Amino acid sequence: MKSDSNLEKVLAAGHFAVTGELGPPRGANLEAVKEKAAHLVGMVDAVNVTDNQTAVVRMASWAVSLTIKEMGLEPNYQMVCRDRNRLAMQSDILGAAALGINTMLCLSGDHPSFGDHPQAANVHDIDSIQQLAMIKRMRDEGKFLGGDDIDTPPKMFVGAAANPFGDPFELRVLRLGKKVAAGADFIQTQCIYNMERFAEYMRQAHDMGLTENTKLLAGVTPLKSAGMAKYMANRVPGMDVPKAVVDRIAGQPKEKQAEEGIKLLCEQIEQLKEMPGVAGIHLMAIEWEHRVPEIVERAGLLPRPQV
Picture 1: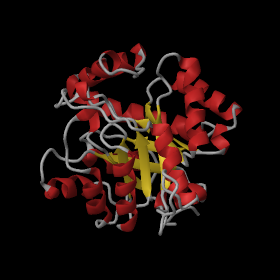
Picture 2 (picture 1 turned 180 degrees about the horizontal axis):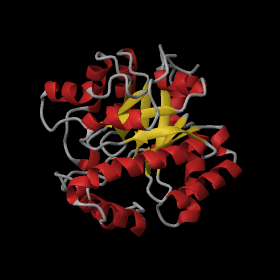
Picture 3 (picture 1 turned 45 degrees about the vertical axis):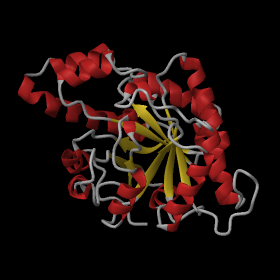
Picture 4 (picture 1 turned 90 degrees about the horizontal axis):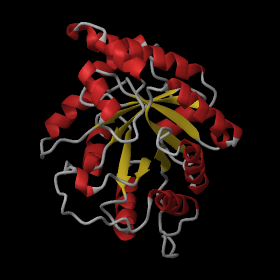
């Protein structure tokens, strides 16, 4: 094993993995973190802790990661390249490893113009693919990016994100291949609503041998309402929500749209379980953490394996 990561152990044992997500609060209220995290205990194998997602200032990912670890959850510590140079990244990685955090996700990060500090300067000293390679080298070779030896290398299970739906489609699997070559132990994808297109993406990834060298977790998000479905379809860049999906949610009375969204999600999870190369799901509930226990139970994903 490369680390003490629970997610690594679950995947290595051949279980269908389930990861969740938790967005830190916009303040110093740890009780808010604990309240949301409590819904995830025993429901998922690891929890992504986002890092100033959508370029909006929030509590530090490492602080929330440590908090939920103390609650018995495994944090998947997210780190974006937007806000740190290589010195700060390596320093934070060593600190996280020293505190027992051993699962990480490498990300570029949304441009500051999308967030609450549009005047902020991007860093992007290295990109997310270089970030992956840097952590792999720190772990496997015990070397800093500058070449010096590390006294105690960080044992991180390291992953990356992928969007199967960006344009041009034919380049998406090639970009996935770059992340796998850089050292991604696992991949979590963008939210999937277009199952047909995702199946084609997986076919290409399988044909290139990528699914033999990494574990791919398919991203899923429940649609809470017709308004959310339309917003995701029309306003979120890189998202592919077919008209049939929007019409299905919109075709229900307003009070039944959330239930239809969960029903659709459970159907998608059943399809993903049977799709070659899919090693699990990444469930992004988006402020619906309290519905996660219901979703994973209805999807037949409980109990979670003890490894």
